[in-house]
Image 1: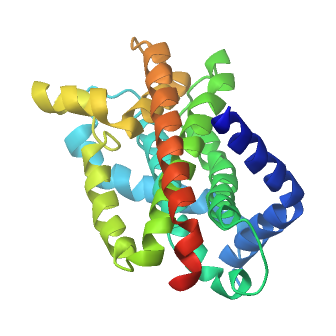
Image 2 (image 1 turned 135 degrees about the vertical axis):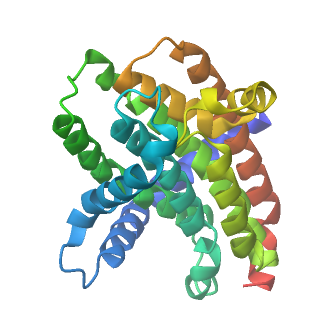
Length: 265
């Protein structure tokens, strides 16, 4: 009963502040491309140019046995970049709103949620780059494409939980942002983004496919784009479980620490 009541209360509070939430998301997106000549077009160009560079660098080493390596590479990089960027923006979200939080009451989590959501909007724009590469490589579109929101939503929920956890930690420990930079880089190399998972030794492959949440989302996404023999349903179930656990952990940590924020911001 207590959990249901708290969940309903949080939802009611969010609905009351939904206009502020949408304004924060809109502000973050505008600021990201402020004074940019190409503006929102960078959402397509940035992943596209990154894919071209990484394809040139890694194709000779990792492209063997990978069908349509540019699409394979871009599909993995899009999801990982979204998660890493969302958490990176979420980490200072509470501290960045210190001037507001000291003056009026605002649900503190709404700044973190807006940071992650603005990055999701950017990622959706970036799917245009994937469509361009699919067309350029002559790959046919399949009905599976309609299912790509499944891993994106799972990863969005996972990123919210991770963002909430690190955002509250950043209030007390300013080194969190630098530690996240190191951790996310290591996580990138531990995730099969620019190399096929079959290249890994059997023991490491078991750890990556069984205990790396990012692999669950990328494996689903790639199946919906490229097809394959792997059963995406298993990774969908694992991805949902990982997202739910991370969200619960993030909410619990944030709720436990939020009343102390005013003493440290």
